[in-house]
Length: 418
Image (tube, rainbow, N blue to C red; front, side, top):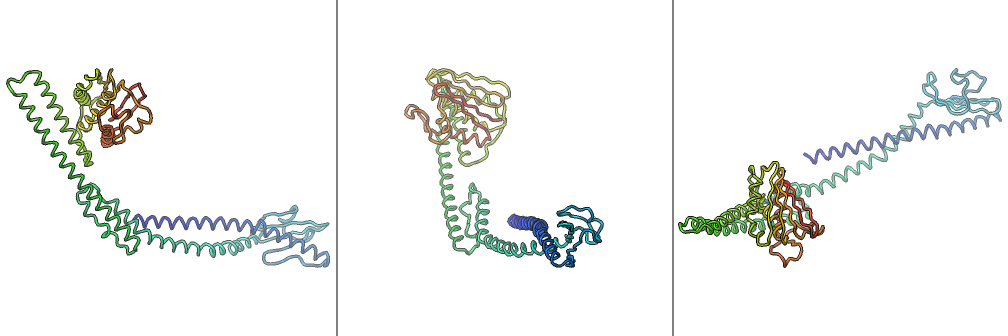
């Protein structure tokens, strides 16, 4: 339907352009005929009359269907009296609009009256007819070529339209049969269709392998995490378990629970699934992540300062926000030799500022690229994927990440969730 509408619109535009060209050509033709050809003809007619009259005093004045001549001092229409030499456009009865050329030689004044209605007929004859003869074959050729081009291009449009309908996340992607959807017999089209069909099946196999890997990985990771969580809970219930050990076991339980939630969020991210949303207490999420990184921070002499103000409850995914905040805090601790890391919740946004080594503009531009590690990679642990995960999760949450950093002046990261 859209192709037909587009073709109809293009045809109407072409007709409109032809009409505009014809109108301009007619106006130009009329101007040329009235202002150039007729004027020149009247001047030559006057020269011819005076030259013949000098030889034949009784030479007759012009008197044809569209041209009438009058001499001053002889009977003539009232509207011609008092006209100066040159051209004049007048209304005369019964001709209507006329062009009058007045020329005086010696004691004689000649008045040539030309019927302007003839200009319209000449315009149609010398303007519209040549335009029609010239443009209609050109337009017919263009229309024919357009039809031929449409027949050639339409199979590729069908291919593009079909490819846009394929859901790459569907489990039955391998069932897509491009060659069955496109019925063109053109050999070039068939080659492209076969290539696209092969590519579709290769993508389907790749997605299937990735899905199988994520399912296997989630199962293999969940099992030991479940065992660790169960063992820690049982150890906490032991009657002779010292209080310091119970506190450490509680830390292990919370860490495993967070890890299970993070694993679930990362699996959902890899599958492009929608994150479950709820009303999230950002202050609670921030404090949990600060507590999770407190041991690593304390080992480097880093102190956390948490500040909560304004609105701090936002409808979003708690697991995803926890991963984002956790990765930003981990970077702040990793790249700070000491000092204070400020963690703030302000009006639904999270701000984390450190006093670490900072980074230059070029490093900041590559911060969210996978496997990128700023500074000396050998000086810090990690794979360089944390901030890439942050960027991908933020995109899924429709959040924004702003990084402001200067070398040796620390880094500020704003997580804008509202």
